[in-house]
Amino acid sequence: MIRVLFVCLGNICRSPIGEGSFRAQVMRAGLSASFEIASAGTAGYHAGEPPDPRSVAVARRHGVDIAQQRAAQVNATTLRSYDEVLAMDTRNLSDLRRLIPQGAARPRLGLLLDELEGPRGREVPDPYYGGSRGFDEVWALVDQATAALLQRLIREHKLEGKGR
Ligand code: 4NP
Image (cartoon, rainbow, N blue to C red):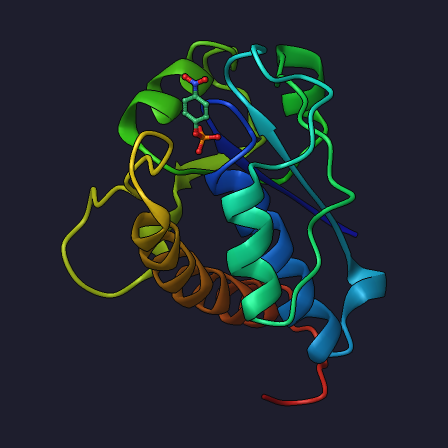
């Protein structure tokens, strides 16, 4: 079982899209039994809430239902139970690093967009205070990066999927 966690600040805009898009791709690949997938926020302001309606809408436009997700705050204990933790921006990443003891083998922690070829250190922009266009951009970036993530994990864990 490969445990994968997507993390942003509030767990209502970006990381629910990460969770939803990755889960949909894992399902299409016939690999659901090999993964446990979740998302969380570094902050707890929105704990217990469903995703932002703009995130629900963009996911739905791409055939993915994320309406049942509920926001949760990440902590050191939950973090330890994941193998791969994907942060949306560098602030999320530094907040997460502080929760992991020095030298701990798990989880592997990185920026989601570092799964893509090209310059390192790219961030998924926070769309919270913008319009719905920002959510389209988030979907496009995140969906490409989760596809690359799945290909990496298939390779590293020698998983047998249904192909692409
Ligand atoms: P997220 O977006 O981190 O992508 O879920 C945000 C959601 C809420 C807030 C900030 C960012 N907020 O300040 O409440």
